[in-house]
Image 1 (spheres, helix red, strand yellow):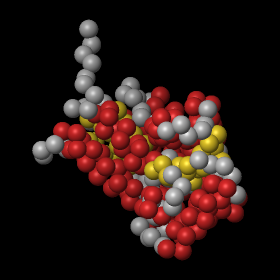
Image 2 (tube, rainbow, N blue to C red):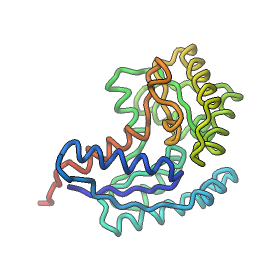
Image 3 (cartoon, helix red, strand yellow):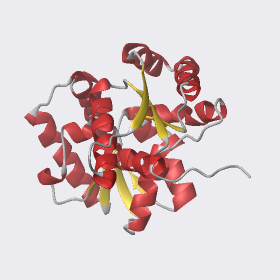
Length: 236
């Protein structure tokens, strides 16, 4: 079995979901007492969040680059950044290591393509919804059209993520607001909605709506499971 490296803590609430999903996925495949071989580097999210909102993405990238380097030195065979937003600096992180980086948008797009979804709604932080590092990757590389909420709705989604979900607060009124926004995306022609922040699935899941939801945390974790269970290829 290969070893997966996780850059977590952004927030730790969703990193718990990654840890559980990857271990459950490996155990489902192998049975018995099997669990995943993992290296976890958990950052202080307060530092990351401050740099995000100050626009200091280079400083945030440095933290993740150092984490990825430590993970590689610890023996991991690949690394996951356990957050959608910080994939804004994924290329810089990937360039700093020699092991693969499993990209959350690519993993999600693979599942959308398999299910023939060509127009999708996107929920996430303001950075993920408004900047092109995520949406452009889906459109340019996979031909998937992305629709996002209105500016007012984006502010609601962003606020709930940072002020509630990252702090472990689950509010029924916020769930209702999210469902209303999901319905709005459906009205714009979206065939499904990406839960493009790893905390959103703590608030909204498929039992709350008929609109197909794609939970990026689960999808990314499943990609990690598939990777660690692939046989190693020995060099000639």
